[in-house]
Image 1 (tube, rainbow, N blue to C red):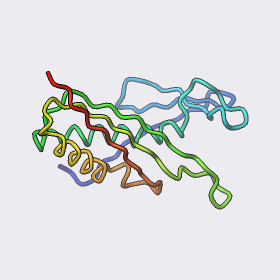
Image 2: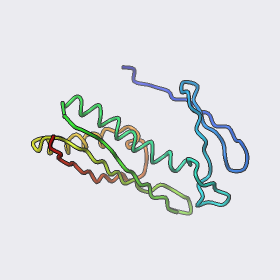
Image 3: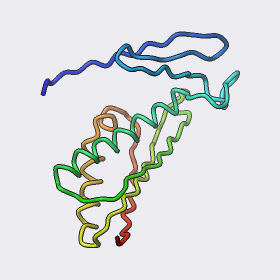
Length: 147
């Protein structure tokens, strides 16, 4: 696998505090806007703040899927909720922390420790988490549901 990869994304202003985002290699266009907590922000549209948290959370998932496969972890489901904390630091807004709350369902109690190890390795290996200054906090839950 190559050591360098490039991902192009374009944004186009549409009016007010809203625009669209797309990539030539993807079929969908996403509407983006200033979040409603800021002056002239717009509700109901993805904001850069949402996308920042989503990037970290989705990276955790995709990294989990790869590591779980490599470690041969059998699981029934993976879900994760993430919450980003935006605050003023040195007179600048900054995402100071992101709390990840992954929830993995497994069928065998014997896989509980392995599932936690996979989650920990996934958080440590997530390239997006490793690329940001925000503190990443993980609160994993592994649940056993017998078949």
